[in-house]
Image 1 (spheres, rainbow, N blue to C red):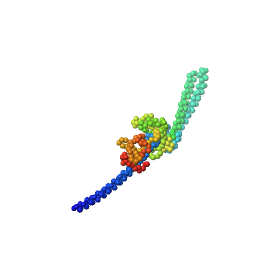
Image 2: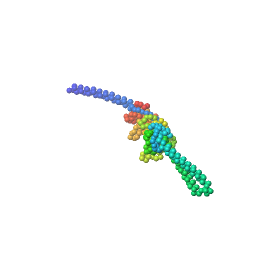
Image 3: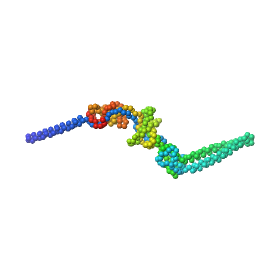
Image 4: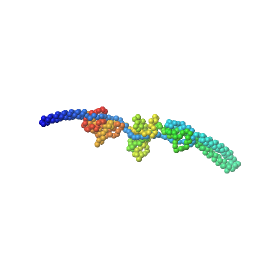
Amino acid sequence: MKASHFRFIGLAAVFALIGMSACSSSGGKAAGRAMAGVPVNAAETIQKDEPLEIPTVGRVEAIQSVSVKALVGGEVTRVYFKEGQDVKKGARLFTIDPRPFEIALKQAEALLEKDRALLENAQSDVARYGGLVTKDYVTKEQYDALVANRDVLAATVKADEANVANARLQLGYTVVSSPLDGRTGSLLIDAGNIIKANDVNSAVVIYQMSPIYVTFSVPEQNLPSIRKYMAEAPLRTDVTPAGSSQAPVSGILTFIDNAIDQATGTITLKATFENTDESLWPGEFLNVRLVLTTEKGVTVVPSQAVQTGQNGLYVYVIKPDMTVDMKAVTVSRTFGQDSIISGGLKPGERVVTDGQLRLVPGAKVEIKSGL
């Protein structure tokens, strides 16, 4: 019994020594890792010029759009454009059969000529009888009747001239031309169809493409700043299509609405773009950035360096001995991937941008990338 008991104690002692050796080895590795520091990414606080912008969403709107309708009715004899075609101001769009209007013009001109002949005869009678009435060869009543007839015919001639002008105008309406430079939409009537004068439906809609508006709204609290900076210089407006990575297109703010929308608490603005390449399309929604000014020499850190704690915003600052300290910061605004710091940091300080979850004040760090 005693021999087996001693053998058992001996084996236990061996296992205990092996366990102590393993624990010692594991503890040494952990200590080595602790000495190496927590791996983090870092960046340096810098000073740079940053634009002060108001981001929003806007929509492209044509400065002018015209729903083309016929002013006279008749058969459409010819269409001079294709759907979606660019047209110039004064370019022919379509022609309405002019023959009925040519006939009406000729009738009005003939009636005018007849009444002019009658007027000339009446004027001759008045001139001829004017000398006779002074000699009592004709009565005053006869002479007055001739004068009245002359005046009636003179008024009739004026009415005929107006009728001729109206008939000529109606004939001119048979050629429908573009009232502006723009792009045509869908053609709603083809050659051979009958068109009505001032129909409810338009024959085609034309949108001006260049220049063009982008309309957007901003909260009313931005209005004082916008008016202030607009009084100093024209305000640049940059736009990009939603979800697009293409370079922004720049225009100038040209319109501030005269009232704030009480339902939304916003005010409507419009920026004008030259749009010579027609990259902006009426009805298109865009991301808009209204640039108020450029702030010079502001303190900037990557936005991922800024953390939110119970006491507000803070960053981890890397000290020269490669330990970190927690600093409270004040962020005035963000721009792109940057946070503009108005308090708490100085240019040149290094801040942690990734790995903050494993840090506490005083922890040692090892910079993986960024600096």
